[in-house]
Structures are given as structure tokens and as C-alpha cells.
Length: 339
Length: 172
Image 1: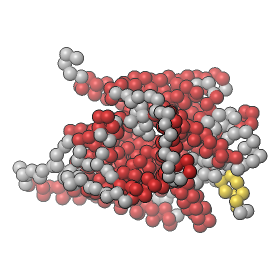
Image 2: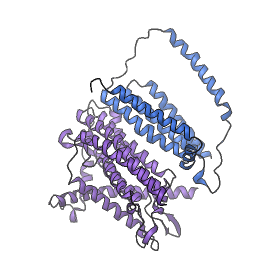
Image 3: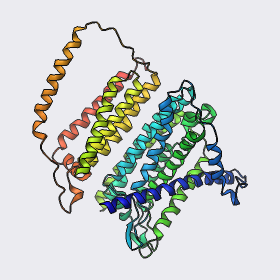
């Protein structure tokens, strides 16, 4: 029992460390990808190839003054960034990033924990994560922030339905809510390549899932909560210094988590060629797939313009939701008659 | 076993404290936040009695969807702080105590047989099908309780249609 507890603590700390570093470098990646797409050079002054840029940004932010507006609800204003950061960090404990390896003569499973409601746990955390944004908008006592918070809550509720229903099709195929099981079920077919994305209706389900998860993570074209052309900066208009950084971190963490979940559900998680004989390839495949999906999200961000608010709502309720319900029916029919 | 009991006590205290805070708060938003606290603590309590599915659904449905709507409406209407009103009938205040006592007595009477029971042991080798998992709840819902389940969904559909009829203005 004590051994297990120690293992959990070590794994959690390692994951936390990796995630925080990854967030810093995903911001650099974002700026580099943005500048390639816009035919610019991007950050290249701090360190070789701009590699120390996140450090410089962090240092700059720490030395800024943390301002609380006069009429703000003080406690909620301070609490809100933490409320959006913590759920984003908690999601990662159920995602498997490899099978198991022998480390110092001790067998280590490469996931922090597994629970038989793993997928519901992730859905629960994403739905709770909206409170950080909503409360930031309300407590700032600023009309632009309030508008951002309101938009965010409406958007989250609309797209969460499509997200949850698109996951149901995946569950119909795998028959388990445990993410470790879901990855194991995708390991068949030549050389660990039986990914869900190659199965008939699931490739269409992935499109719905990916659009809905872009909306859940507030990425362009769905970044209505912080639409800078109309709302200054949306829900974090009043924030500065490290509390602003916490919102940014939460946003990029959500991007990483959404890509990891997409990898786990549709792209076979850590599965790939030769992973059966060389187990250490698992985490590498996982990282490569997640990075590829993050790149696609950035590509979309700098290519597609932002939706108008009524378009966003109409698209969510009249296109995505019916499409995901139709997909459940098709998946169920296919499973019933072909298996 | 002991650890579960300690966790149960901690989360029960959190649930009760935030439930009390709902009554004491004058600001509607803080009241809604306290309600979210209660719901989260209840979910943790479900976890300690190994009802994992209910625990997760409690957060997804109540804390994640319904309470977001509550907060949305409070923010949209910008509901002001509740002002203490002058009581019209002071006598009613003194009726509260005996009625609360009666309610507590009834609760003790109903819950007395449950007080001594313990958790069912985990069936060996078949944790997937233990009570409280998705498997067992799904199986129960779609076999033994299929009719009540479907009737409930019709009830919810009626509520949705009713809400749409009421929300529609004349002449639309």
C-alpha cells in the first residue's frame, strides 16, 4: 500500500514537471508555427533558435505587478485562475502514455492510475474547468470580462453535448470507459496499427470530436470568450502578472490534454510499429502523435477566421449535435450487423 | 478501511458546511458556488462508498451542466444581493423549530436500520462487475428497470416540449 502510494506520488510529480515544461515550449511552438504560416521569422533572439524565449517570458511576467481592480470581488478574482488551472492539470492522471517498462528492477506501468470511469472523469473535469473562466469574467467587474465569461459558459454547454455523444461511438466499439483498455483494444491489426481512426464510422466521429474539443479549449475559430477584436481580451482583460500566466497555462494545458485524449481515443494511444518488442517506443509514439495534433490545432488557428456568435450556436446545436446522434445510430448498426 | 472513514468524515463536513453557507449567503452567486461545493463533496462521498459511476455523473450533470446554467443566468440577469425583508408574520418563525425537530426525528426513524450496515465486500476477481460500476448500473437499467428508465425519458421530453411552448411568445 505504502509502495503504491509512493509510486503514485513520484509519477504525479514527474507528470507535473513534464507538463509544465511542455506548456512553456508549446507557447514557443505556437509562436514559431504562427510565424511560419505568416511568412515571418518568429522569436529568434533569446538563446539559439529562440529556445530560451519561454524562460524570458516567464521572468518578465513574474516581475509585473499583480493588479486587483478596485470594485472586483477580491477572493473570487484571485481564486479564478487556480480554478481553471487545476482541472486542466488533473486530467492527465488517467491518460496512458506507454505499456510498462522495467525501471531499476521494478515494473512500472506508464500511466498514473486507471479507473473504470476514466472517460467520465475527463468529461467531468472539462465541464468543471469552465468555472475558472466564468468566475474570472464575473469577478473582474468589467463589462468585457463579463461578456467573455457569459459566452464561455454558453459555448461550453453547447459543445459539451456533441463531445460527449461523439465519445459514445468510441465506447460502443471498445466497450470500456477505462482509457488503458481503450488503448489496448486498438493494438490489433498489422503491427499495432488497429487504431480507431481506421474503422468505418469512427473516422467521421473524429471530425466531430475534434471540432467540439477545439471549442472546449477555446481555440480559434471558437475563441469567442476572448475575441480580442470586440472584447479587448475577454475574461482575462483585467488580469496581469502570474494570474494572467495561469490562464495562459490552463489554455495550453487544455490544448495538450485535448490532443492527448484524441490520440488515446482515435490514434491508438502509444501503439505503433514494433512497440510490442521495444516497449520504450510507446511514450515516443504518444508524444509524436500528440505534437502532430497540437500542430493541426495551430494550423487551424492561423488559417480559419473566428465564428460570429450566432453562427457558433447554430453550428453547435443544428449541425454537430444531430451529426453525432446520427453517428451513434450508424456505429450501433454497424456493430450489430458486422460483428 | 480506516482511511475511507477519515475521507468520508472530511467530505461530509465539507458538504454540510457549504450547504449551510448556501443559506447564510446573501449574494446569489456565492450561494450558487456553495451549492457547487456541496455537489463536489457529495461526489467524493459517493466515491468512498465505491459508487464510481454515480460520482462521475454527479459532477458531469450537476456541477458541470446544471450549475453552469445557474451561474450563467445569475450573471446574465445580474441578480442583486438579497435584502433582508421585514417579516409580516413573526409567529411563523417560532413554528420552524418544532417542525425542524419533527423532520430530524423522522429522518432518524427512517435511517436507523441503515446505520449499522457496512459496505458489501468486493467480489473476488470480478471488480468490473461489482456494484456501482458502469457495467452493473447499465445492466440494471437496461434489463430490470427498462420500463421506468424509458418512462423517465418520456417525462423529460415532456418537460422540454413544455418549456419550449412556454418560452415561445405569441405571434412568433
